[in-house]
Length: 142
Image (cartoon, rainbow, N blue to C red; front, side, top):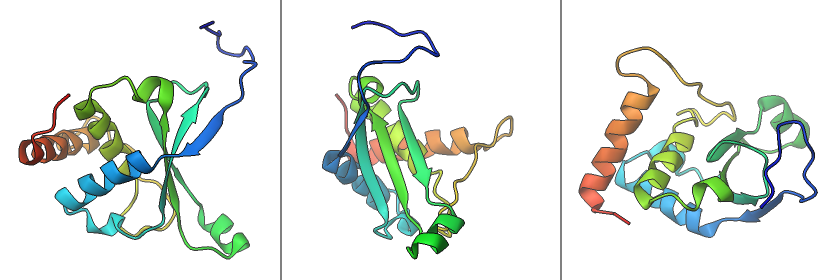
């Protein structure tokens, strides 16, 4: 597989496919960790292939102006980047999925919650606690 420098164009197009396996796994996380505000039914899950993104996964929100213009309710997309996400162990995948879910605010407005850095009890500290709690209760390994 040819590596591309940043700024170079790839000849392969990105493809996005629905990811029911990711939806199922995140629903288990949501239920096990009692993240009830995420059970709204307006979160969609996709797996991308040939993305140039360096991330493992991304959360996408639908801003209020788009909601108003299109006449739709708030919605979110959780996208996993196949080339980076799929080879990871299940525990790391779960942590990444939970990370993306924690970007969705409790008011489910279409906005995204930013990371908080350099604070005790930060975004990542809370994330680590949640994922350890989940794996302690579900004994999942790969």
